[in-house]
Length: 89
Length: 351
Image 1 (cartoon, each protein chain N blue to C red):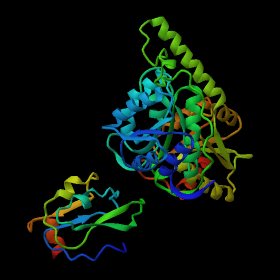
Image 2: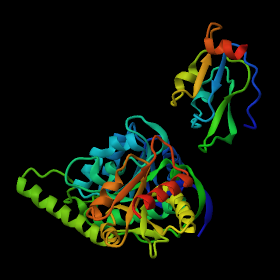
Image 3: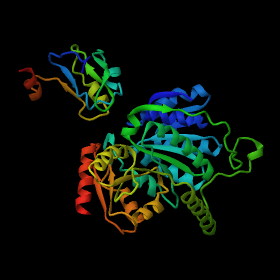
Image 4: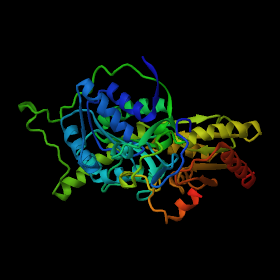
């Protein structure tokens, strides 16, 4: 997607599945450090989607709890997280 | 009038306003939220009322109230939200109140997902609500029809004093197409039965209760006669490349669009198949299908469900000919190649 910046993961970070996002904007609006953006591109279902701007995530999880679409948002917080370990390798 | 590239969901609201609708009570739900959002934007601008209720149940009861005053009023939701409105719709039908309800069918049952399905066919045509009522159900398959059939829905609702519904899938609701918007309706029908807030109408009564059994029997008889008139006069359908067909496909909504492509391919391969697209799902084009039942080798019904409309097709042809089914569900929509394969299988199975 054109305007999603290339992301170098650094704990904590948030991963948003663009194809599962329906563009409700709740995560963007509720993020306390304001590290989420809203794309101008659309996904294959025709919705604009949110994305992590790249740094500043505190791992608070507010975006995850606000998101109405299950599995669209994953928040990586702990270094012991298996998935996080895999991505960080 | 104006020609615009617009989302199906938005075309509904613009059509409604052109039809004189000035009251919208709703609640957001994907994939119908744009209807509520568009209504919130435009209704105040035309001097109308927009209110987001506390829930879908709240909004349908507001519709009941507004309809009692004679206004053209509507609400919109998607599958689980429509389930919430069912009691209210039964009340509107019982009290003979016109209104328009839009269902943008999403994946179900339960919370499901936000993908398109056609699994609310039973809910809308056989009544998710209680009692002896029917909804007049119109099924658009394009953004243009989202506008035109909404206007038609208001007309039918007023003519028969009954709720009318638009049933379509999340695909048609979300897609953007050019729409030619008509001129606004000049004159709305008179409603002497309504309560306009003045002394003149103070003796009018809007109610769905009939404590006396004889009274309710008479009332339901009256409703049944009304529904018989709707069945007699208001059936709408479209046929595509059906001339001289040996086989017929029956589909509505987005499936009908994909099916037309599949039929073009099948016809090019020498299979004589056409499409019958019901536009009114209730009343269902039974007589036309019965006519076809005497002339075809087989019918293929394609739906985004495990098979609902197919029951009405089988009934219409009185089981005289085989009626096969091809379905996808869960939010998945068939590609035309799949439907072509289904058509080829139909011919193989019923040569």
